Image 1 (cartoon, rainbow, N blue to C red):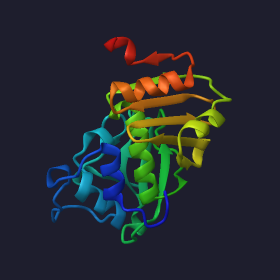
Image 2 (image 1 turned 90 degrees about the horizontal axis):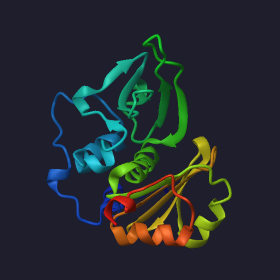
Image 3 (image 1 turned 30 degrees about the horizontal axis):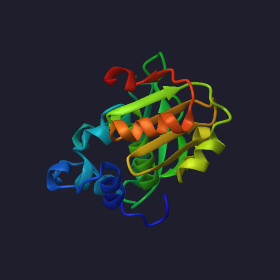
Image 4 (image 1 turned 120 degrees about the horizontal axis):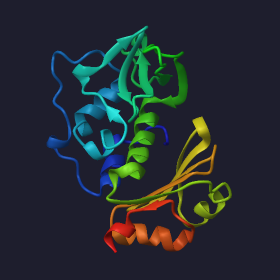
Length: 215
């Protein structure tokens, strides 16, 4: 995501509609201290489940947990990974986000930086949510190590998450995510036609596809 990108404009483009007051959360006195960009996100899109809780789960502001100097605000769908910001960074506008794994002993592993600022992390997570159920039609194909060049030939590059070299490509109602570590591919379309276009363009064997349920 480019520096200075407007979060509202990005999410309106992703959702293909204007955000309204009902999409956001009115700030309350009992909200904990948090970075400015995260606070802005809650205000404009904190209630949009398709980019907040369809797969990974964004906490409500009053449900954030403090652990070892970090304030946790999102958990992975199987509660294996947690994301947080350092409490000492709560007064910053756009600090780095950190991740830790949940261990079998019910303790957390070491926190390490995601190499993404808060605003970048929020946008990357929104795209990740979209290809994991945020759009109605989608599919998954495992082990596609040589596919990235083909993706770039058909869709503009949107962003790359440094961890795991997870890259997003797309336009309009079409979004494709390629995971560099294992070549897994996630794709989603806002409409059936959008996803069908992805399927016809790539011509690969899908491990799972929503089209089979609707055709």
